[in-house]
Image (cartoon, rainbow, N blue to C red; front, side, top):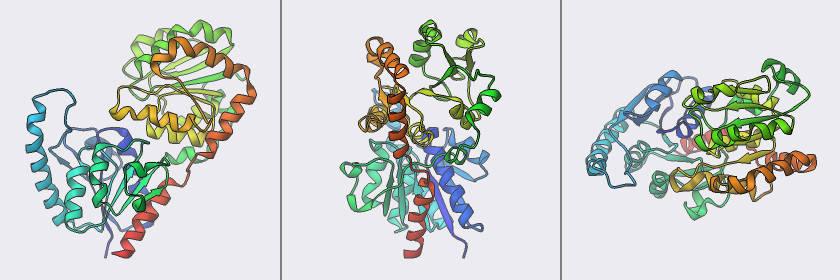
Length: 363
C-alpha cells in the first residue's frame, strides 16, 4: 500500500517552508507516497504549496485577534466549521501519519487526526512554543524541536531535538568567497556586511542602516543590503558601488559566501540557516511577533557566545560601540563563527522524517 501523509502548517513562511522540506524528504524516501497539505483558506500556503508541486485544501480558520475585534466573534464558528471539515478530510484521505508545523490550520486538523488515533508529529521551529502547538502537544506522538529546554512547554518523553529544516543549498555552500563577490560585483579588498530583514523587509533595520551609511564607509565596509520588497522604492537611492541595495536575494548561498559579517532578524528559520553558515551575526529581533519569540530565539544563541543580540530599543545606545568592537576584533569574530557553527543541525529534515517513519512502522 502507498504511504499517505497529511501535512498542515502555514500563515507564514516560517511554517510553510519546513512543511514543504519535510514533504520533499518523505517523497525522496517513498516515491509512490501520496501527500495532501491542509492550510488556512486566505493565507500564503494556498499559493506556495501548489508552487512546490503538492495538493492543498483550505480551512475557514484564523487566529484570535489580540485586540478586541469583531473577528473574534466568528472564531468559535470558524473552529467548529474547520473541525468538521478536518474530520471529513481525514476520513476521505486516511493518512498513515499527520504532521503539523504550526499555524492556525494545523490545530483542527491534528485534533481531528488524533481523535481517530492517527499518529501526529508536531514540528516547533521557535524557542518559545506557539499557542497551536502547545494546545496539540497532549495528543501528539512526537514533538520535533530546534532548541533545548522545550520541556517547559511539552511533555519531555515526546520531545526530539532535531533542529529546523533548512534549504539544501545552504547545507554545504560550494561557492567560494572570491567567486561570490565577483558574481555580486563586490570588491575583494573590503569587508562585506550582509543586511537581512526578511522578504518584506524590516523598517527599524532599514532606518538603522540608512542612518549609518557614512559610519560604515569610514570603516571601509561594503554592504549587501536586502531592504525588502516593501521598502525598496524608499532605499534604492542609496545604491552605489559600495552599497548594493536589493529588494530580495534569490541566491542566499552566494550572499552568505560573500559576507564577513551579518545583521539579521531572528526568525526561527533565519537563525537555523545562520548556524549553518557560521559567520559572525548581530541579531536585531522583531519585537512585534507572538510571544516575542524572535528575542528568545536570538537569546538562546547569544547566551552561548555564538552571536550578538541587540534589541530594537537598545540600538541608539549600543549599536555603534558594539559594531566597532566586532570590526576591531578578528578574534571575537572567529569565536562567534566557531560557536554558532557548533549549534548547526544540517540533518534536521532527515531526523524529523526518521521520527515519522518510526511511527509508520509502529502503526
